[in-house]
Structures are given as C-alpha cells and as structure tokens.
Length: 163
Image 1 (cartoon, rainbow, N blue to C red):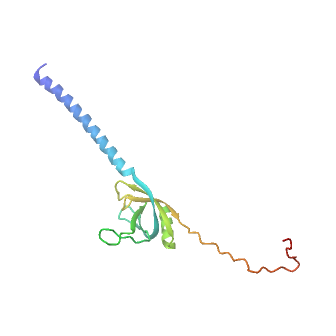
Image 2 (cartoon, helix red, strand yellow):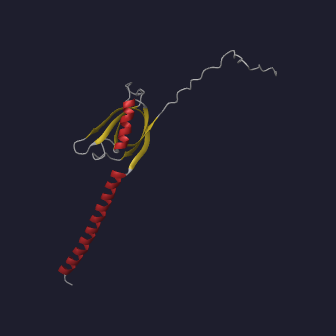
Image 3 (cartoon, rainbow, N blue to C red):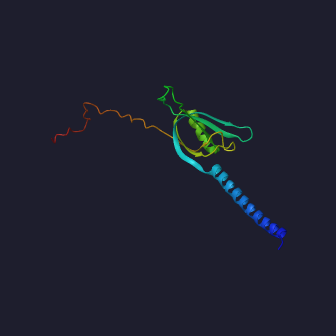
C-alpha cells in the first residue's frame, strides 16, 4: 500500500469515529432536553386564597394565577414583609374552572402542583403547574341547645322515684 492509500483508509476510519461521536452527542443532548422539558423537579401543595386567575398568551393561551398565603411574614435581615403571593400556571381547563370557582367564592384551597425544571411558554409563564384543587371546608361548631335547667314533667308521665 502506498502512503496515499493508507491516508485515505485512516481518514475514512477517523471520519467514521467522528460521525459516531457526533451521533452520540446529539442523542445525549436530545435526551437531556426531553428530560428537562418533561421531568418534574418537585411536587407539593400550597394552601391559601386564589386572588387571580386569567387566560392569557399571544399564541399559546394558558391559565395563570396567584395564590395569597393569607399571612404576613418578615424577613429577618431587612425587616421587610415577605412576598406572600405564589404565581402558578394551569394547563387543564377543568382544573382552571375549579381554581376560578375558588377565586369567586373566596374560600381557602389547597393547590397540588408539579414544579418543572424549566418553564416553557407552551405550558405557562411559571415552572409551577397546578393539576388538582382541594377546597378546605372548615368545620363549624355544631349548634346545640343546652338542656333545660329544670326539666318539666310531662302530663301523664310519672316522675322517676326509683332512687
């Protein structure tokens, strides 16, 4: 074999390694991108009062809302009130209706959410996607009438004299 033929065969071999490496990097990049789009970073609940729910967007319409925690806290370092409003997005229209009902009634609700790694305008303006709403119905004390202090004996009934 001449030197020229050896260089051509070794060049073909290197080109094949470069193509394989490039395909592996593209596949890993695609897998990472899909993971960031669809995987959940965290899952949890937030409880408070829904103060706003709106359907907005230029091309992709999403439901965006605000939840007020209903308490005021202070930051220890600066003495300023902490932000007690949580911003969230809703992708399901049925869940958005439930959130809107909670907003109209002014009742305290618990919102179940999943936090994504990155926000996508297709899903909403925030990383927090609400998928379930639970209303907190606070039990009201039962109103009972106290027994009379001196029970009257009904006519026709004999008093209990067994004591």
